[in-house]
Image 1 (cartoon, one colour):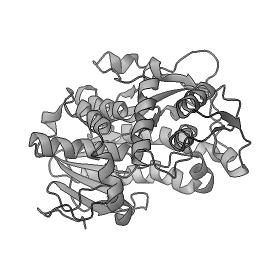
Image 2: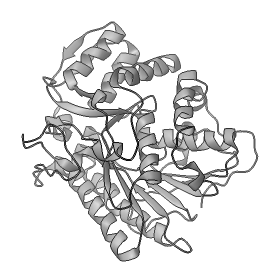
Image 3: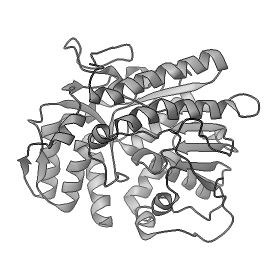
Length: 370
């Protein structure tokens, strides 16, 4: 059962969680999203379920929803979902507050689902970093397919029409660039060798999108599919082994930034505030059943340039180090994976932060909280 909240005075609040919520830059980010035209009226009075609520993106989304409730007096209610209540208490300082509840559930287990009905579901739970791809390949696929199906079924159990559903897809559905485009539009289909360990993540995300289409056709669901680029920000988890997350960790500690390749790979990135705003925008202004790339050309950068920019900010250097066997097995083989955001921009969405400003905010917030 969910841990329902009463009017208690912040039970379970921990310094690490409250620290970011007292930082002026982080509060600016929350308010940037909170005050944007993101269809907030359609969420008032709703229970919003968020899987992966303690992750990089999920934590920021929960923070935005709770801040809107507390400052604007809205009646949105957050149902945070995760595999560990203990981890959630250390990450989400809302236990004991009105409008927040947490349910300990592993949605990737067949047949599992939350016990509390929701009006809107954000499925953000996913394995999203290389070491986990290599060491938890079954869990990687399960969270993107079994977990998604469990939550789609859960959404269908709502009285009346099924809950509105947001499936956070990924740039990885495009596979490797065939060399015929600079940026991927939503119809592009690159190459994925499905007979590899690393294929589990992109192939399961592709399958997830197909599953969403199946539920839309057969069960009448309104499913929204934002395709996320590589996201970074101050809600990054210390366990995240993505290159950008490791760079950030070194930058915060003012240590040399470790590059484990030549760094010629060029990718689309997005600051977490823009990623969350983009997902909410797609829910409010996008068309159900249509995929939307969330990206901004100002955030397209090579891995080497990103490493050097963070090292420069830290006053350190970039050093090369060979990845270990486990890391190498989880690395993406894509060398040029940039998203074309024309479709979502046509609906009126634009990212607020470029790569430099977003990274500067990330490093400043995390350094202050270290």
